Image 1 (cartoon, rainbow, N blue to C red):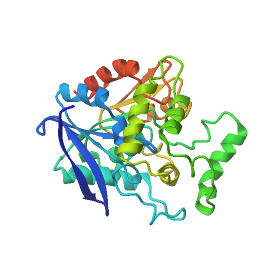
Image 2: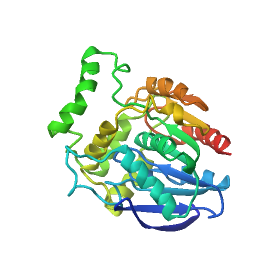
Image 3: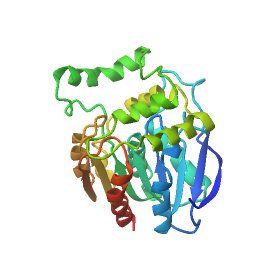
Image 4: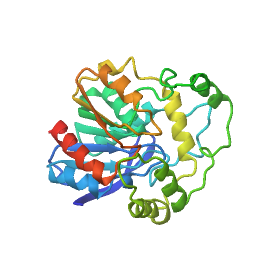
Length: 295
């Protein structure tokens, strides 16, 4: 990877750790990562093709994860930060780097943040790519069971009033546990590259020491606090590419089929047999589509 710069940017009252790759004068791409995930998951298998295609690539750790500010001391369930706050983090990072506009690419929760940027800060966005994401995570119409429909409706109320000790709010932070989690997120078509994920989480957890045990719960609360974007997606005017795997076990593919048509200038790309992941063989299909989209 053609690494050029790293540091911590003072944005939105916190510090965001960032890294840049490629030639500064080239069109910028901002890569936004998902729930409980550090920026290193955007590895050279993603960054190198984008740099080689003539782009200046920025990856960064969201608040509460990696080398960015952890919100543990100030966070409370009654006043969680929101995806709108995280979108502002991203935009102010671009301002700090003196980048007027960028192509925004987000994965999972990162796709939700990217949608908020395109809605709330349209002048900063050249294009939007939303991968394995949703316009409304707790949409009860997506659920097939009545019990799930009911649960989706009451989760926001419960979270604001109670703290639940469970595998999401208090989970084990180890390389093995994270590799096992990502194994569960795989689809049926692509082989799970255990060696790759073991190296990624060794970097994240043991070398960077950036895996905040409270990030998963606190970032999920941000998703819940932000609610639905479905009525606002029509405000997105930039070219938009929505990508989703047909075997995604975490974010139902129905989400993509529902929210993509609500964005006026959008294209939906369903990757057969892909789960909630970006395996190497899937990237061979996805990256050319992204590069074509943002070029």
